[in-house]
Length: 456
Image (cartoon, rainbow, N blue to C red; front, side, top):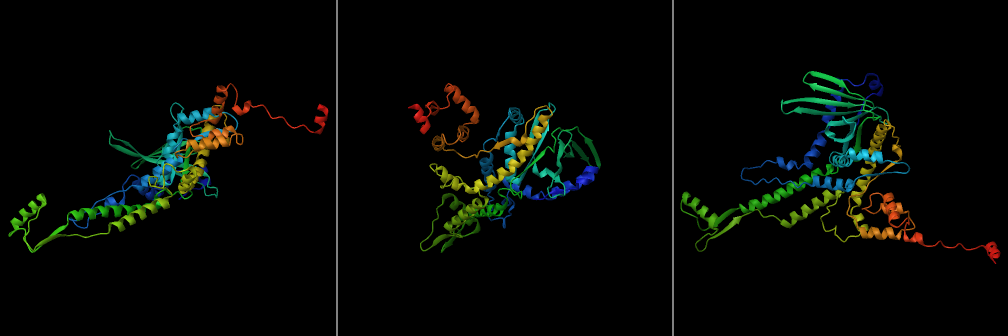
């Protein structure tokens, strides 16, 4: 993954001018080919679509088997199929969670997770609209990057988001570049040779309001390294259909007879043969098709091997095969999803790092409104998007009652959103009693020697 660097001293003294900004943008465009290729494969625009026929009479099917989209959608659903929940040890974060709901953070999280899977990284912008309501918007990774200083810590200096602003009515377009620093936003407008710049007011987030999320340490997409296998699968499938199609168009060879005496008669005879599917021949003659036979079993073995390698090396299993039976136990399912779970843990660790910055920015914004929340004490909770065996979970929770706290036990149940709220509801329904076990009289402690003598 490429990191854009800039001198901190130069930036603090002179900022960033248009010429240097254009240099950075041009460099970013040059390294975005990988992300554009990943996007094309997710959208089903594979290399097989550009294949040219070797001859006009040869079949040229272009079949796209979109494993790329399958891998990204399954990995994203497993990673963030359920919304992120936030808890805090002490204090109230209702104001913050309400802000996240108003900003549609769940939708931004899903879009970020999909971008991470496709491109290897994701960006989001946190801003306040004209009503001072906080919004969170996922940005296109092909048009966004963060510049860091030259130190070993790689501290962020500013973020750049560039795009084409178009007016379909006036048939005009212009290039816009937005530069976000810790205190303000600068807008650069490029219209031909005319370059203008305007400075907006402070954003009050106390930091660069662009958050970066990495899919892994190297910023590699989930199917990026399997593209060659996907191409091989597409080619094999397309050629397989080509062989079937060419088999139907095979040459008919007639031995010891002719369809007609002249050329015109031959054409008419071929038409009748094609319609009626009947060929009358004299004794001693025969007819057969000239075909290029192929071993269907070998082709099928190769197809399965390529597909298995796609899922094997992407760590995303094919959940529709026989290995995922509906009666599989929770432990068996975990073993089958071990590879997917490993890459999801990496995604979670990196996303948690980005959430830490997001929460800090939001808490800084709330601090301007005299609402003080310590972002470091907020804990995001991720839940895997996997079908749950509720009966098995209930048995586990019941067996651990009295050993593990009720809050921890209730948090393991999928349909319980807030364990503390659920505990309060149980108290109210039972008249203030926690559980039947709480109604039992306490066991009497055994008396020691002195207490026994005094009682006698």
